[in-house]
Image 1 (cartoon, rainbow, N blue to C red):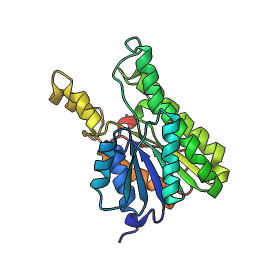
Image 2 (image 1 turned 45 degrees about the horizontal axis):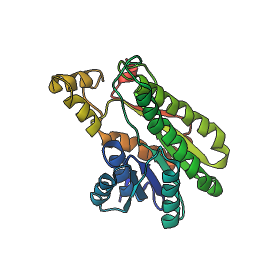
Image 3 (image 1 turned 30 degrees about the horizontal axis):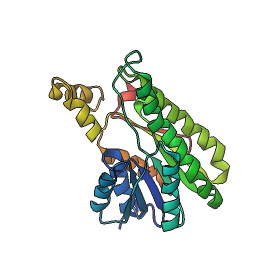
Length: 255
């Protein structure tokens, strides 16, 4: 077995938003690398599909990352089953396609509840067990939208910007206690959410081509490519990497 395939031996990982897209790809990549994975998602059936699609050890768990008791149950269930939490991937997130004036308060607060409060709650409740062992890896899923302004993404840009800076704060606050915290900022990834977004346009084929063209590689990022970045950050190969922003965007930010 290759070194890449055994990068996470004996580790336990929680991956939120693991029911599809990037989260599912990360759960499968981590499990193949030797980790026991808790695939957490609001949609339990989707999390079960993620588990069923892998020959490795993946345990599905339903969680609402906006709800503190639900997050506490996720952490407790993981500790009861595996005795430790080595890796936390805060991948659960939602998007929005409106500029500021078009965004109502309810939508703004819902985006922040999932994208920012969810990261806060998962970190808050997973960190104590990591600190007790003086070891832990946190990977937050940001976005290119958290680094630059994108039209029709007001709440999304603001929420992902918060994730980026929270990542850096966690990194510096806990580095001496053996905790590493990094952020992945993907470009446009070929996920079910993007498929739904494109399908809602008058000309889906033209809309997809437009998304592809804004990334210099001329294509969308594949979920497995983001999962590969997550595996690196989770592994001991990245032992000196904390507070970093890893951009996986087909060259978008280089323009």
